[in-house]
Length: 93
Image (cartoon, rainbow, N blue to C red; front, side, top):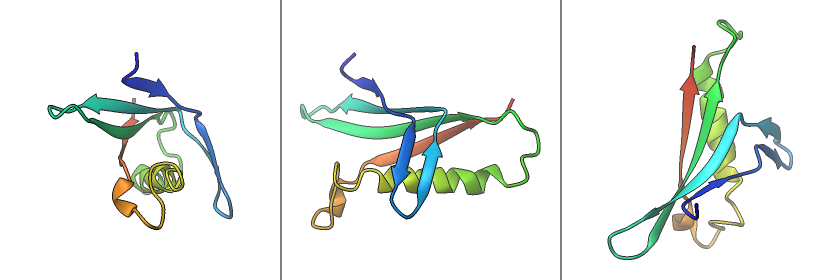
């Protein structure tokens, strides 16, 4: 529907590298005043019991890249308030 949009799960950021998300989307949430609030969501499944790093650290990296990828789309250096909230959900089976 128009409120939910799956996004390209690969983000390349110049001088910072490439990241591949398991499931990356944005959700437009209708507000009572008729406006829309957008959030970005990444869902990751970590199948390796001990990947050799802390998933929390990797999650912080993913959040940072999700925010940086909004630059020039949701916000720029003149309007940092346009930055949208981002969430990462880790599923550790």
